[in-house]
Length: 438
Picture 1 (cartoon, rainbow, N blue to C red):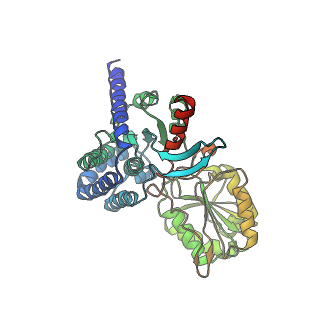
Picture 2: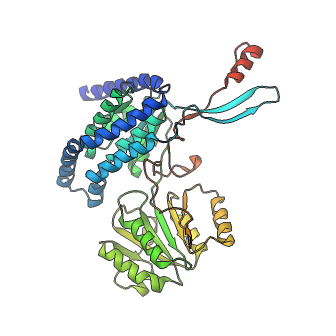
Picture 3: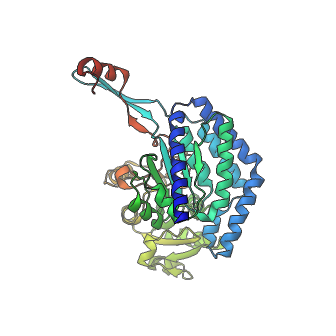
């Protein structure tokens, strides 16, 4: 009982402190926010040894607990990843400040002028699991958008998260951020999350990032509005018109570059007309990178020394060096497979051109009622139509695919704010004509 009361009181105190900070943070100048983010980046680089020492404790504990290699990869920091975290902070610092932007203005027939203006939400609680870099990208996006943030990472990364959050908080205060703009809940007990989810008078929004169990717990217990995500089951389709050498590079990057994150490719779809030319060297390259291949019956007829793919594999988010491969008749079957099994987080189609027929098919897909982010990796002789399938990550915008009512895709600083606020003309009109009641 004593521990439960202690946790309850501590979480409440953190939430109240964040609420007080949010009121000052919402009116903070762009310069102070940007200077704070830049200084945070400097501090992460200067104190990288301190961060790595803390992270090594988490890694050692994870190994002693027998956690998977994919899990340990998500948990692990190194100098390269710390530099990426620092770069992310600097990238956010140079983005336009969304706070105060007038999105739309219109006038009612009675003369009342109404406007949509971007304003901060207030306090955002972010609950996440094993990736300590989330501590940085979540804090960066919240600060830039004028929101105070309460971070609650997984117990497996507790030492890393404490080290990073303390450095960010202290650096921000040095450059003018209000006290408690960035706070981390360092209580590893599950009760801390449950108490956090009850504090709807202090916390304005909850964003969970993690597995299905975490998402279900948050949605079931929260009295606070939740933006939740789906799993990141992503596909790459290589069409018969594709440059096969470039297609091989795209597919290899999509699976191997960082297999433990949610925008990694889990299923490779290949047009039947190129399968015999494309798959043997592609699978050989994957195997050299220690990727376990599970193929459909048509794939096994071409490359025999792979595992059989089951129906469950098409719905599996491996987050590991495991890949399912399916041969399809064409782009229509590929799109049908993606629609049925994918999360629409980062789906890629690769072919040689972007003709009118393909554009029409993609537009139909976009209007089919499934919100998604679709990377059209369509190669032309003069360059790229778009981007690599793994170009979406936390500092550009978070890579969590959202629930369909909100649309799917990333959340960036332009999504974490309130929209509505009356313009001065609207308020003056209300006072003049309705006694101050809008």
